[in-house]
Structure formats: structure tokens, C-alpha cells
Image (cartoon, rainbow, N blue to C red; front, top):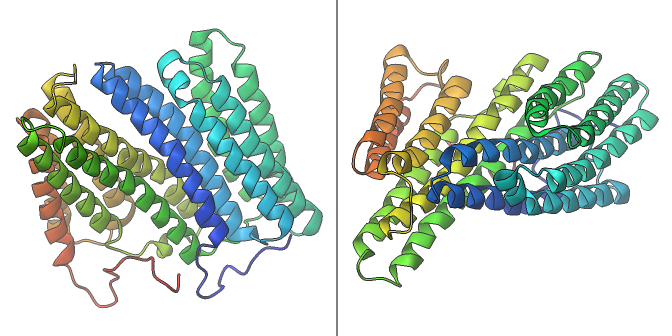
Length: 383
């Protein structure tokens, strides 16, 4: 299993990678739907915490598969079989989302997570066997993942409080493994390919909010009383999702994949961006429930399920990509738009505020034209 050329031209996501991503649609959907249900039942705090914990497992497994693939996607029969095994693990993990978020029972989550992680260990052992230069790095990955995975199972035996604390200790251990392994010798990464992979996953997450908008339209067809309110929610949610898409793809990202530090910063910061995008769809569903009179959540908290994810999404992209690319005045306008979104939490209806603020931010981005600037999505037919 030899590494692929990191400068390979026109490298695009493979059909296997696209197929792999489809399984994560299920996992993200299960987690966001559960967040929606818990929020509607006025268990917002517990729902958000459970969502963030479950989403870590989803995000981390997806990210590890994607970074491994950009370096070692040989696309032989064993690589495909191991990818299918990881997909099975995703489905097991998704099936345990409700139990983990409602009852703090992470048994199914841990089993599904182990299936994905141990399949990846097998891939790293293949790298170690086939490539002398990267053998030490591959063995570090295999050893680190295996040790931490054993600890995840041991965590299930701890009392609830100790297990809760242990979760975050093991999260820190997980995210330390790549930094430790890559510090010996870096694996090659194709910047255009990896940023395309991140862009595709962003589209999956934004697609969840589009589905939520469609649900508002479907719901409105079954009721006359709330027809106007539901159609209004659908329109504003679509506009806001479009604004989030525009912000994310307003600049190319591949220049951020250079050093180990910048690559880790790019990969890890997307946890906030991805989690916020997934949570926004749950917020739209909560807004639909409130309009239909099916939610027990207070109005301000309902608004917060929409404003906070959108603001975190925009702020995360600004910190990662846009902050150093925009002049001071435009940075100030961008942050003002984020502040307007957050302020909308305390207004009667947050979705129009989010839509207007997204428009302000888009004007900031769209009117900035510099020689050589990339103002179109990085995803195209040529990768």
C-alpha cells in the first residue's frame, strides 16, 4: 500500500468515497432528529450535550477515513472491503444515537465506533507492511488507535460521573494520536482532494436543513391554521442555508493544507463547523413544532436553536478561512452580521434576522474582488 502522489492533478472524490459519505447521512440525521425531539420536549441542554458527544464519534471516524484515503486510497479489493466494514460500523453507531443522548447508554455507539476504528487499524498495518519510509508513522497510528479503543470499552464499566469525565479525556487522547504519529514523518495529503472531501460533507449537512425546510412545506399542506407561518419558516430556512453554503464556498481552502499544524487546525476546527450545520436542521424542525403548537420549549430557547448554530458556522469559517483574507472594514462588517444573528435570539422571530444577516455577510464577501481571489466553490467536475 504505497502513498499516492500529493500533487496528483485533477484528483476528485472517488465513487467509493461518495458511497461512504451516504452512510454518514444516516448517522447525522439520527443525531439531529434526536436533538430535535429532546429540544421540543424542553430538554435542550441535555440534548445539545448528547448531540455534541455523539457527533464527535461521527465526525472523527469520517475525518480519519478521509485523511487516510487522500494518502493511501489504493482502491484494491481489500481497501473496499475494509471501507464497507467501516460503513457497517457507522450504521451500528447511528442506531445507538437515541440511547446515548437520552439515557447516556453509549454501548451501541462504542461498538459501532470500534468496528470503524479497528478496520482503520488494519489499513494502517497494511501501510506499515508495504512502505518502509512510513512504517513508523503507520505503526504509531495503529498502536495509538488500538490503545484508545480499548480505553473506550473500559469506560463503559465506569460509574456514570467517572464515565462522563472519561469521555472527554479519551477525546483528547483521540485527537492527540494524529499529531503524535505525524510528528515522526508526515503522510502525504492532496490539498485539493481533502478540501473537496470537506466540502462534500458540508453539503451533506446543509442538505439536512434543506430537508427540514421541505418538512415545513409538507406540514403546511396538512393544516390551514399555520399555513403562512410554516411556509415562512421554509422560505427563511432555505435562504439561510443558501447563505451558509455561500459563506463556506466563497474562498478556496486548499492553501490551508500545508504544514502539519495548519492541516490539524483545518481538520479539527471543522468539528464546530460541521456540528453547527447539523444542529441548524434540528433548529428548523423545532421552529416547525413551535409553529404547529407541538413544542414545550420557550420562545427564546427555540430561537437559540436556530441563531446559535448559524452564528457558530459563520464564525468558524471566518476564523479559519476569511479572517486573514478580508480587509479590516469587511471583517468588522462580517462580525456585525454574526452579532445580528445572535441578537435575533431575543426577537419574536429569529429566522428572518438570520436570513437578513446572511445577506449582509454575503454582500461583504461578494463585493470583495482581488486579483487571483477564488470566489467560486472549490468543487467542480475536475476536482
